[in-house]
Image 1: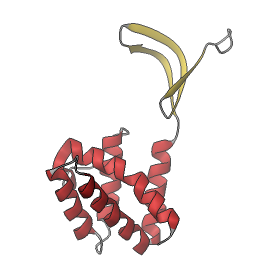
Image 2: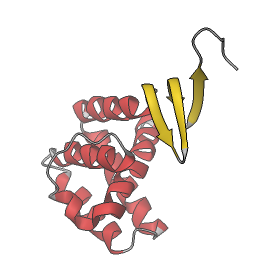
Image 3: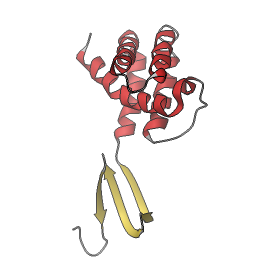
Image 4: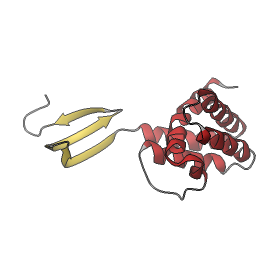
Length: 142
C-alpha cells in the first residue's frame, strides 16, 4: 500500500474519532453542517467516505465499534485500517479527502474585537495550528 495513503488515513482518523466521540454511532446519520471544528470536519470526512458503496459497510461497522468504546486503541486502529483500504481503492476519494484535510489544516484569520476569558483583545489574528500571532497596526509586531 502506498505510504501516502497510510499518512492520509492517519490524518483523517483524529477528525472522525472526534466526531464519533461527540455523536457516537449517530454520526453516521447526522445531517450535514458547515462546522469547521474537528467534530464537524470529522463528520464531513465520514460523509465523504460513506459515499463509496464498496467501503461504506466496513467503514460504518468500524465507526459503530469505535462508538462503543472511543478510547479503545484497537477499535481506533480498525477504523484507520478501513479508511486506508477505502482510500487505496478509490483515487477520487483520495483527492476529495486530501482536500478536506488540507482545508482543515489551513490557517484561520480572524479580525476585529474578540473576548477571550475576561480580556478584550482588539487587532488582527492569524491562527496557525494553535499559535496566535497578533498584529498591532502602527506599532509593529511584538
